[in-house]
Length: 438
Image (tube, rainbow, N blue to C red):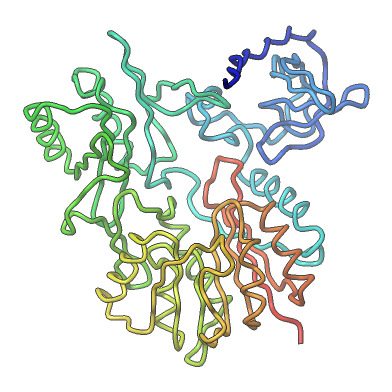
């Protein structure tokens, strides 16, 4: 007879500590102020370096405490009034209270700390663009209870939905679409049938995807199709039980880059910041400098965001991606753009033996892995001895780990760039160029 596992008990809420005065001397990578009191570290959300603040501990731990800001006694000269009315509650932007030059400095300082073992003598370069109205994709949370509708984004460190009237980092078109969508949903039965909503803007225009949790009547669907036509947006429906919305090829999305057109499914991964994506690809081409004798391996290639621009310049490009649907999109994009020097393959790059690279004659590698990094596949890269490796990272800590491994195996760091892909947030994107030592 199997023993029944007793239900987990919810952790008891700790009593709040007394309000105390703190001197803040640093920022974490999550944009929390770091202070020390009686030798113990305290993280204070909303506090900035050089500030004197009052805060109240709400979570005490053995190594550090977490506290909520109650009063600013001496503000930082770089503190600014957040432009967004939802800043204190929304979990999206964590840096709007800090002047933009200092946002970059804070990110640079944290990145330098992460890369201290591999790039201590390398100057970190900046790649930047507009700090507002840059986000061309967003996932909207929604919950309908009786007469109450909650629609917006998740709160800070919370599953609570924060009612959002306007999001300043969304593109202007998506802000307009969101306002109309929110107003219309407040009067519609559709709100009760939705799990979430996805907003998207690209070269094709704006689109809205409804993820349904229940079937809807044909007349209700027709009403929303009419709304979409009136707003000038494309509407997609993900039905209950579907992993992905089923769409026709003629309704695929597309964006343009480097004189090329990239078609993709509206739920495929693309870079959120269109302007920065263009600058990032241009920088990758400049740093890697592919020529007609290079065979370039593009790992985690997606729909060909790097592969096709590289294919215009290199002898050959091999793009590898785990998702079959994105590999098919990459092949379709290569054919559409009449680039015959790019081959797309499907392989699980978390498994070192998923593909044999030794016979490809690779001279250079570009990799853009997910947050977990590419440690499992690094030995496969090292075996083919590429002259250069361009690493694009969305997680500096795994980049540092992987770079340390590559350096130990005979590579050196030539250049590092902090790419401001998500202004007003603490998120850091990095590009690193490594070269094999002679």
